[in-house]
Length: 505
Image 1 (tube, helix red, strand yellow):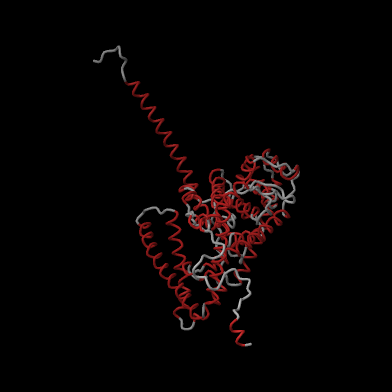
Image 2: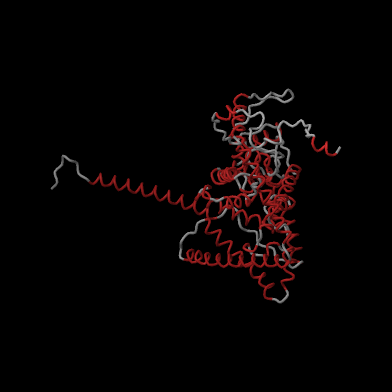
């Protein structure tokens, strides 16, 4: 059996389509020689080509379905999409920068913080030295008789103030270990450091505190002035314009015109308005103007009067050079010193508000005290304000003036008209005597405590303006006299000449 098994050939049963013997010699099954002989086309395919073509055709023929639950709108253009994307990118960049700054601040060690503060004070020292050098030239220029511009005058004034602040600050530097008490001193006296050493955080904090204070004072002045307002009666006014204005304002509730408001505001003087404000109103006004609120009424009036005189001189300088000549920081400082709202206001709006102040103050002669009170009435955040224009704010101030101020102005108007009565004079005299007695009592208490009270004997309406008016009147008189003399000389010359028909001997 084994021999027979060897002689019988084996046939493998398989389902393969190829044979094991002739695999290398013949073509594989299913191969077509004719198709293989024909040349093939270009088979180079760009991977993105089908996608681009498909996207292009889809953009040309595809119609976006309109959703049923959303109102239809005009689709955004490419420019709108670009602007939106740029804004989002800017917001994201700002947020990233803030995050990076916060991370850097968190990562700062104690040594790095000390080094940063030392660098800040070193830069402030170099800046102060540069300002002293520049201001020395300005002082020499002023001593030589040249007139300084508004920007030069403010630069010189700021440097002088910084040098004055440097005297108490130098004590902490010279006395050993006194610099350890410097943070406590700065906490108690924030204006101890010169302006060149002041950081951005302290500036922002002061600006925020001033905004909050002015917002509180705004509502306080509205309430106090409304409480002390005087209702008008038929027997308390005799001049027609004065009577009709306050009758419209208080009795009928009718809003007067802008011309009437300006006419009545011109009657009120700065000094009379300031002298007849009560102590709560004076304190509120000092807080609003960022002044010291400690001391007697005379000291508070002295501070306000001094600030008003500075603002008046600055008004003339800005009016001469133009509001457009101010940079944005100078514009903000000028508006802030006048009680005009600066937070969240564009530079264009600030220029308009400052120009409105200058027009009312210099062109129409509205007292600066009433303008500051009107700014306090208007000062508010967002849409809380009740007054849209300066005229409306002035109307609100006039509708709620104190009783003493009303009687004082009423007597002045009637005296000018020749209609003042002795009863009116007696009433005003008693009110003023009460105010004088209150001031004397405060002055005596102040002397007992050992503090000196400044003499409040200067007017806000400066004497220079009166001198200029007197000089202009004298100049007009001299011109008129010179013209009259010239006419007389011409007439005498014509009389001396002989007629043309007569012969000269």
